[in-house]
Image 1 (tube, rainbow, N blue to C red):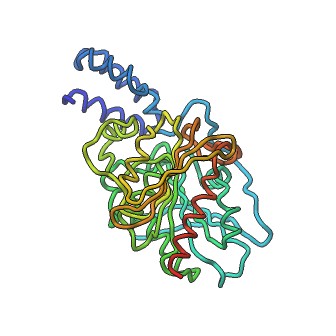
Image 2: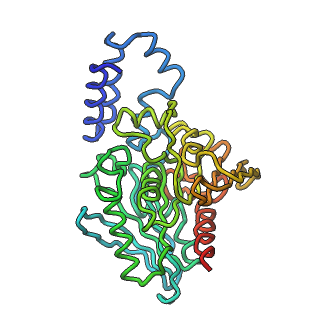
Image 3: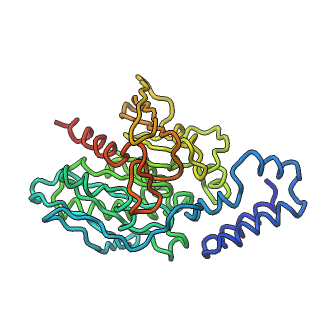
Length: 351
């Protein structure tokens, strides 16, 4: 990649952050058409990979045909609450919604931090995933932090920036602070905090699991990417497209990974990069919600349980979700139910 192309990519990132993905796309296309990059290379790239415009829109969270978030009503069980709150700590502040189930506070079993995808918000993500209903049945708190446009123009979690990829700084440190505060305030048991997310939120959940194992016991990653898959916007595009990498990016923690086999925004190969090579691996297949799926389960190199769910004919959307929210597909296995099962398995393993 020459310096001219790198300059064009930096200009594209600035335009994307400013909320103009169309201009960002044109900036790259103008460079490709300007002759500074070999025509054969440009032609091959555009033919064999997802169009650059689609990748830019995917990074910004604007995929054609998918509903954008609007005001939604999230169902509540009698006695439960789902209310907006504010967290402020040494690494920043964010608004979030908190679901508190109807059980007695003394019976709360743990916390799930749910990280939305680009352009989404807490209520939209809660409606699309239906996680609150599963939390009600399992006596779990669920927190839905919200990214702001001030920190990312399309409200994406900044998984591809080095300042947000380590335990001690940026968004990982902020989210860990939020989780730690809730554990303290509600008197939750140790080792029962989890994170899950979709797309950019899934990538950030993976970072939390990899860098903060003392806070997050296990993670659920839906349509996401591995920690270290990108260090800037250029490598983010490449990772989303599924370009080859020689690095081992697999998660060192317990995780359940979901991905649609038909995802053209984040290439499905990213799912297997998250899990890596598993020991004691076994593969099963089935059908749920009208979609076929495969499940590969086993142990990481560190001995942690890992599951990879690949769902046929599913794109960049939460499997088994609700159309009440964006980026959710009602067909296929219920990702929220399976993540809750996996997290419960982790809690029960201590008994």
